[in-house]
Image 1 (tube, one colour):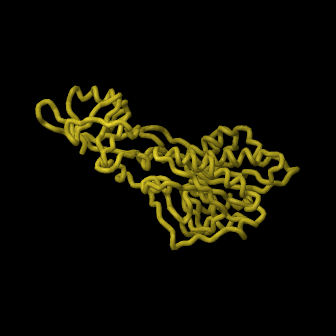
Image 2: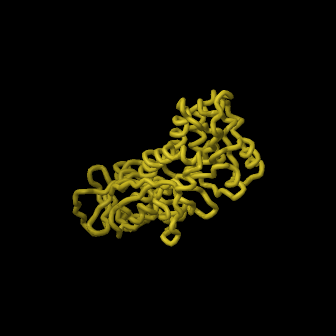
Image 3: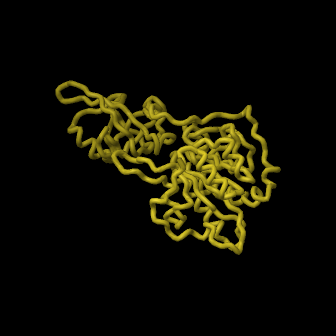
Length: 350
């Protein structure tokens, strides 16, 4: 069933929410969920507040409230929280379990949206949804389509070691990320940038700029004419990340970028106890950086403690510094606290 955030106290609507009957603006519906979606929402709200704006954000669609941390109460999606902070009316925030629910679609039709916009929404949009907005639905996708279609384009691009990526603004069709492309923006990939930072950069500097710049042509229909079909023969996929992919392999060159954020990275280490026995620990790697200076290890698989960091030898003569770690069921601690807890026991990589 459709859910609205009616249980929350409504704040005064932001100026982009339809209040005036003297100026008829074109209604837009925005769909998203994570924090990067809020970046795009800000751009839309700011643009709609302009005296010359021809559109308004009529409603927001996001994921239902969920338990977003172990043992904590239900929390709204980051997008919903941000929208309420901006003064958006809770009555205009919809949280269906699925975008194809009849009650939700009925409410959407009642808004008569000219355009729907998605940015990291995370739900499949059925045909009966796509048929509702008169100007269609457009998506901000953080890759240069048809490359990296799917749920994890940024992480997969970093995993592949790409030197450039970008954002595509495309019409949404039933096939995954396969619609005609309205515009793209290319960004060079820094060797040290991590997935959360690159994702924010793509949505902030590129995605929001593309969207607001192209909105007039989308609303007047000219974008539909100029949009270029994708070359499906060149398509590559970016499937959803599985938590089991997060295990580090220290035989590879030092770099922890693709899975920074979620699901994070994990490692197995061997601790040599003073009684001669050994035990295996599974640790979550919280914060890392690639070390530029060389380190002398007593043995090839030793883990050293240097300058406040756990230093792991990696492939091709590189080393990885781990600054924060977390044991299962424990709080994250800095490398010094973890090393002190070993009380002189040696640690080796596995």
